[in-house]
Length: 91
Image 1 (spheres, rainbow, N blue to C red):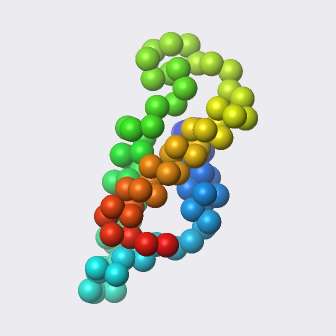
Image 2 (image 1 turned 180 degrees about the vertical axis):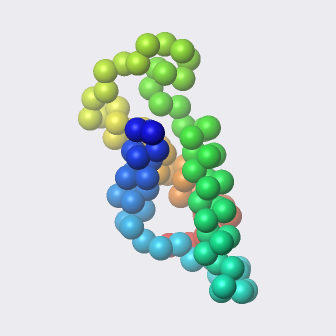
């Protein structure tokens, strides 16, 4: 739960709280539905591809520092943004 809150906060901060738009979607009434599906997909992809500290190898959690948290947040936000852009979304 803590990781999800951190991920969404990161997306809001690094994403500039901007809205996503996909010029490839012809029917505007389906844009919100497709956006929700793509956000869900990219969130899952981000959680799978961005390791969180030493916890990924079953090692005991390391004490977090600002630098480590910032690095994880940046990697998560960057991975999420790249996923959304790869699916045709723009800010």
